[in-house]
Image (cartoon, rainbow, N blue to C red; front, side, top):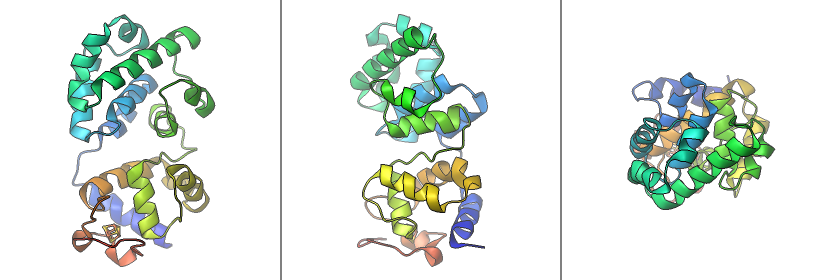
Length: 216
Ligand code: SF4
């Protein structure tokens, strides 16, 4: 069993005590549009805010057609709890419009097409592919995944893009689908970006603690 196998196994057990993050819970619905919009809402906010704002919006509009018809102010009001709500509402409306007009209302599934839509970055594109389309051919990397993978010593990278490439070279494919979910929750609860809670960490015996200068 490799170090990666051991850590994934420990985190799989550890995560059972928590509810899955909102983005991961969209997997069940197999609705790439809702995954994509929930991901746009989730940027730079906590999961509880993402959940509340997404549910508020989807209760009145859960398709590109419906969102395009909503006045911008109504979208802002519905996602207010997620922060940066003005900018996010504009992006949501724009992205919905492009999907409706250019892609007949169906979210495109390729990374390149997703990235060609203004407002969709690499993390949102990979989340949409992995959770919305269930395509386990990339690893969504946000700040938590980037920081934790470096601290553990799995990668040595400066950007999330570099981290994604390095992770795809060393992490067995069977783990790609769940890696984001495991690391995001672990990053929120234990391996926090500013000051990790190493004293309570379930994988402290397997961690190289690279560049961890301050911990609790
Ligand atoms: S030991 Fe500390 S740095 Fe390493 S994974 Fe755990 S919390 Fe993060």
